[in-house]
Amino acid sequence: MRLLQNTSFDFMGKRKIAAMFSGTIIAVGLLSLIVNGGPLLGIDFTGGTLAQLRFTSSVETGALRETLLDAGFSNPSIQRFGDDHEILLRVPADEAGAGFAERLQEVFAGQSFEIRRLEQIGPKIGGEMRGKALAAVFYALLGILLYITFRFDRYYAVGAVAALAHDVIITLGIFSLLRLEIDLAIVAAFLTIVGYSLNDTIVVFDRIRENARADRRADFTAMVNHSINQTLGRTIITSVTTFVVVLVLYLIGGEVIRYFAFALMVGVVVGTYSSIYIASPIMAILEARAQTRVASK
Image 1 (cartoon, rainbow, N blue to C red):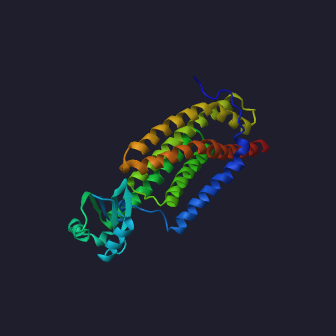
Image 2 (spheres, rainbow, N blue to C red):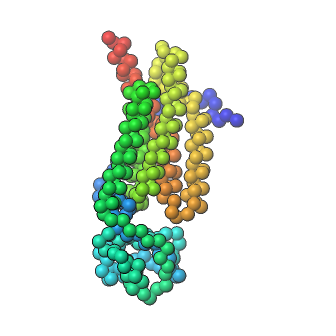
Image 3 (cartoon, rainbow, N blue to C red):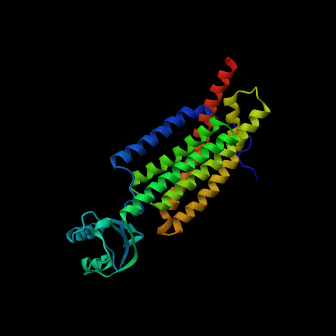
């Protein structure tokens, strides 16, 4: 069964509206990053100690934080993990030593709890991880730019990389708005989003190139719009099936990978949108201008 055959949606005609929509979302995300002093980084990047505690009875995060402040912790971060019996506790690296588990037993002496996980990362290692994560994203985008330039041309490459940057920035902005932590798993999700969005974009670009070769005298913008419509069924089927899988992962995959799955959910939606409304219009505008310059000579 084929879905959405012979459609004629005017995607290119709505490109200015889409640009304003994307610009607004990006601006809100960037404003959130500025107000919050950057993304909320996990201990993978900042260094520190993370403890996953499971209490036998329900607990209030506010009361636990007051208890920790009274015990001498300057800036403890407490986040619920699943139900109201379990929390994730994060403290700076200089406030937790070899006897951190024993200190927690003393601080919460009046309550029964189990330490299910205890992770410690030094600030130097965290700084190195942060640098490597940024480098991974940068080199991924650079490699994609070179690959698309080689396979298509430089205008296709600019459109593709603009769409990928658009996807990562929007996802990062949503994490900032929701105050969700960025750790190594989320960086892996960002790179997965880049790969997914690129695959969708290349399918559209490939059809555009085929149609451009078949009729070199056709209006390029109209031909791009027609090519997007031709691949629309495949795009929707791929996106919906991928989204359903990631949604199931988010709902029943457990707390450990919940935010990884959430990042992928956002990325699938934004990546599908950007392949149609960001990558293709930018490429079409640049190609049309190039053709005009050549024709005027």
